[in-house]
Length: 67
Image (spheres, one colour):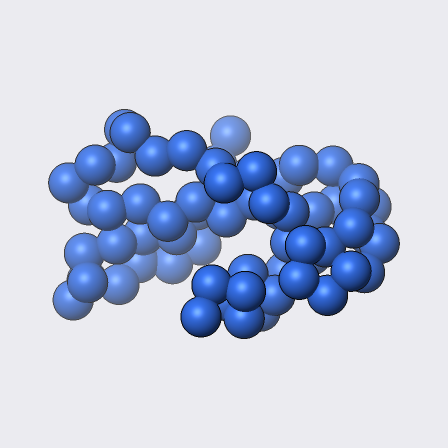
């Protein structure tokens, strides 16, 4: 089940995350018991979104990787 993380009303996008289990963060390499996959969703395509498969330890690592 995806958890709602944030919504940008001007860009009309939302960000959700899904717990993926233990492993190493794709950005910083830290080993964690719980990693997350983040799903950016457009407001007009809410049902068609999928995870990228990359796992991150927190939102900061995801945003650093995405920028």
